[in-house]
Amino acid sequence: MIIMISCNDCGLVADASDGMCNDCAGAASKRIAELEAENAGLRAIASLATCVYCGHVGPKDGIADHVMSCDKHLLGQALRENERLEAALSEIAEGRGRFSTDPHEHARNCIEDMMALANAALNPPAKEKP
View: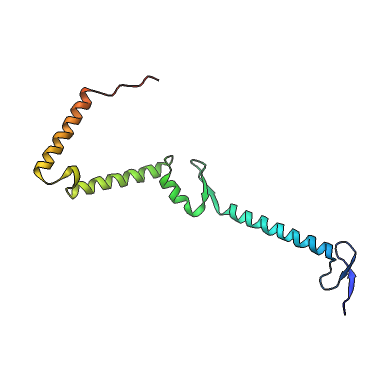
């Protein structure tokens, strides 16, 4: 047996099981779906972070990668320069590249470097006028 009552929202005849007529139940379902979509959007926004230095917006868990790759961050610049210098010191310590332990190779590299320095000193690059 179905018991009919008046709808809690609009006063029309409704089924007693949920206290709503079909129109109000459909509207309520639609509103629930809208609120869930809005909630999902807010959760997505809450997972983002804005960089205070350059304004980049990205995921909170990716901010460290952003700092390392962005040229506007002094910390990222310093860390990249540190990596470059460590690589150069490693090359020197291992006697590789221009710092070869082969005496003839080393002498040739030194002479080439001195020639480049002398040429740069004798022929400075032209300054551009603003």
